[in-house]
Image (cartoon, rainbow, N blue to C red; front, top):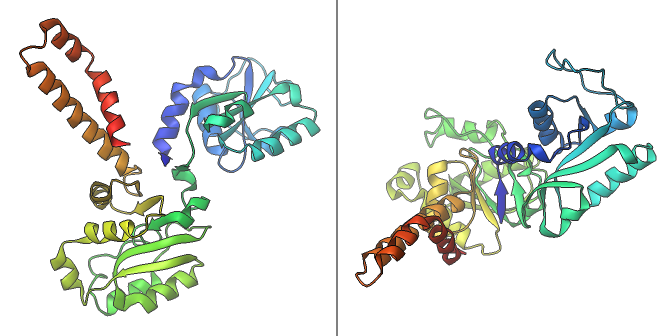
Length: 332
């Protein structure tokens, strides 16, 4: 499973600015996800911005004074328009977009851009910034991907705010929190399994809150301990969640609120754990750390052997990056 964060998106755009043809005068985003990279591209290149419907209707978004262009650019006089989406997979959205552009008589003016393309969909756009194989999930559509049906998802800090210290009293204040917690991320797809450190005794209140906010799920896993004191004494929050994650081998990933817990779950399961706090896939972090350890161990062992020629040792040390890359195969 491949994950891309907001920072990954911006870094990818910055690396690939030169792929946008020099005669592009307007950047247009395909709503909604395409507006995000289109805005970043327009800002980086200091070009006018619009959306797909704006291209068809001949209008641009308003902008500040930082566009002192040598000519007044419009859809009609633009040399070329880059129509941008965040990704292309099966290509159905891009086909619909092309049909609208052609119906508006703008076929020869438009170049189609996707930031991320699957291996077999690169040819469905004119320009693809990066190949990102399927399955994949993006931070900006994390709560809207069909893959949620094959995910384990935390509640506090993900679907709703975390309780404050005062609210987390395992008593009347906590009951009030559960019943009135402010929602955070709102999923539009059914979640496979909700995994929470809330105690089992709070199941009725938790289920009512989930129903109130229209959150659909197949299973709710809660910690079967008698009290908050017992939960704290166990010191096993991450281990409990990791165990629940392992009990669902069909789950593609876990969505966790805390960075520390996300890394612990990834360490225990070696499976994808996407963190809301860090905006990272912590299995990827685990792999990077293990890769570095393996490469260091390999280099240290080989260069310490007396029978290895001096020149070979120097070559190995000089090409340590290649050893690092090769070591990653052991983690897949």
